[in-house]
Every structure is written in structure tokens, then in C-alpha cells.
Image (cartoon, rainbow, N blue to C red):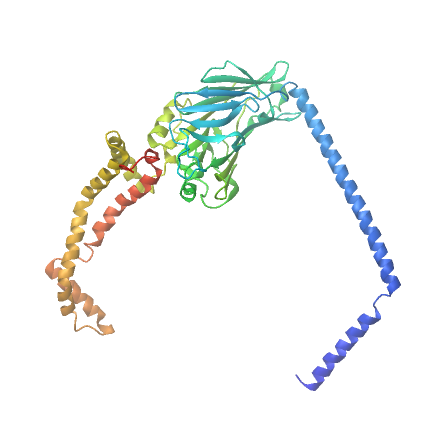
Length: 481
């Protein structure tokens, strides 16, 4: 930088500083500006306060209008006293709440319920509580002409109550009712129908869909948080076959499902809650899975927002089935026999058995052998016997691999002697040819030791996938331990 440039920059700086000083407002002008600014801020605050008050008033009026419309529609169902109704059999005990008319507590019998607050497990319960109270929520939402009908806001009147069935009715007006009927099967399946009576005029002529909003905070049932969390996921079933699920490890909010599905499951490692729609759930359902913090007692927050068929005339009921039970392959497979929908539900796919080839090994070999052995021997002995059986099956391949390794060790000095003269980089081709000639001479293949190991790997990987998902092993002793 020369002398002229430096002088030029200095002159520019002097001009800018002088201009700024010359245009600086006086003390009186600064005070006047401060007063005007304070007045403007005060006016803005008053306007904002008035705006918020007006918005609150509009919201209050709107809420009052909705309540007035709802009261006109459900004059007796919006108020009442919540009552508990218990449906039970030898497998499950389900508690329904008359407010909302849905299951608020599900207890699965015959499985150890771990008390995570007690480290040694001495206070473990004899049954598993899948969810209770606010952990789980199910809403059916209907869009009427005058107001939206949300079943979770209504008090239902029970009738025809038995240990396995109940009818819950909400009165919308004279001759207008909304009825939910529950029937518990012999195992883990609960059937439900939702039907409107005398309410056709309350809906638009072309209205034939209702919204279903189901949410659940999946409880931690096992003592190993990280391991159980790995197998806890929101799974759904394509109406044309096959299952898919949201990511187990990352947060997914309102994930759009573009296929038509017929059931959704909130799945833990060993237990699941499933909802099945007879008329399927439409495309563009939205699914949410949010991992929870370790130590919170929960694994994930699940939510499924869906649409399914609804007949305002009441000629056809909207039917659903629920499964609250263990992720036992045979139980899940046999549960479909209790379904009245005539669908291939493929519940058993909730039990993860590995990738396709691995799954086939577990599906058609490991499961049958495991079930047969577990009917005769304790679980510790079963694991030992299965391991010995797999060793016996893979013995020919292991033997071939060992023999090949032994031959390679014997052949190693001869290979080194045959290739000693090929030490230069440009002689690598000749070195490989000399090695192959020695292999052929003694009848040894360099791949004969690797292939047997690769062939038997799927068998051991299948066991690796089977054991963590076998509910039969849950809480069992290993020999004397």
C-alpha cells in the first residue's frame, strides 16, 4: 500500500467521523425521542393486551357454543360418574372405564411383572400390567353437522354386564344413541363394535368415515432398558400382507403411512397391544414413536391417528378387535382363529426371527425343536440340547473346515519352498501360479476351509436372533441358577 492510498483512507475516515458527529441529535431531541418511544411502547402493550382479551373472549364464546351444541346433542352423556367394569378370563383381566368406554387397564396373567424399583426382584408381581390409567388413550371421533362427537368426553351407561361382555351406551338425544359392545374371548382377543342408532340426520349425507386416535406410553417391563428398548416398536400390517414398523432408535412424529393397513401394534419386547379394524384403516394414517428417557419407567410414546368406516344410519356397525397379550409365536398364530374378520392377520410376525433366510431356519426348525424339547426338559437343559443338536448338524462342515486347515498347515512349508524364487513385485503372477500348482498337486483348495464356515453361519445367527425374542425363556432358571 503506497502513501497516496493511506492518505485517502485517512481522509475518508475523517469525513465519516465528522459527518456522524455533526448529525448527532441534541440532548433535548434525545429526551423527546425517548418520551415518544415510551408512549408508543405503552400504546402497543395496551393494544396487545386488548387483542389477547378479545381472542380469549372469542375462544370462550366458541367453547361455550360447542358445549351448548354438545349439550343439545348429548344432554345426559357429558356429565356423570366414571365407573370401572372388569372383563376377565384365565389369560387376561381388562378394566373398562364408562367415561370414554375404552379399556384403561390391561393385566396379562401368568407372566412375572417386574418391580423395577426393587433391584433383586423380591417384590415382583405374579402378573404383567401392560398399561394403566393415563398411559393409554383411545378416542373415536365423529364429525356431526352441529358439533364433533368425541367418545372420550362421554359417559356411557353399562348394561348386560358379565365377566366376558358388556354393552355401553351414550344417549345423544331422544331416540339417538351411540353403543359400544365388548366381548372377551377365551384367550387374549377382545371384540368390540361401535354402532349409531337413530343418528343419521346428525351427519352429512355423504359422511361415512370416523377418526381413530390411539396413544400409549409403552411401559418398561424388563430390567434391561437398552435391550428391551431395541425390540420395542410401533408395527403395522399392510392389508395386502406383510408388516412394517417405525424406527426403534429415532424419533418419528406423524410419519405418514401411504398403504391401507388393517392393524396397528404397540409392541414391547415380550408383550403387545394390537387394534384391528374389520374394514381396514385408510391410507395416509399418521404414526408417532418418541423414545423416552432411561429411568422414566417408559420406553416409547406411541400414537396412531387413522380413519376407518362408519355408518351413521346404524345399519352396519364399525367392528374392531384388540389383542392384549404375549409375543409368543404359537399364541399369536393361534389367536387368529378367534378373530371373526376372516383375515390373514399374521400376528406372529411381531416375533422377530431375523432376516428372510434366518427367519426360515427359526420358523421351520428352531421353533418346533424348541417347543418339543421345552415340553420335556427344563429350559436350561433345552438350551444345552439345542446347542448340542446344532453342533451335531454342523459337524460335517466343521470337520471339513478343520481338515482343510490342517492340510494348509502341512502344505505351508512346501508353498514357501515353491515360491521362494518369486520375491519381486513383478513376479507375483508367477508366485500365484506356483501356489495353485502346489494346491492341485496335493488336492487342497484354499476355499475349502472358508465355505463350510460360511454355510453354517446362518444356523448360529438364527439362534442369535431366536433366543432374545423367545418369551418362553423370560424369567426362567438356567439349571440351578
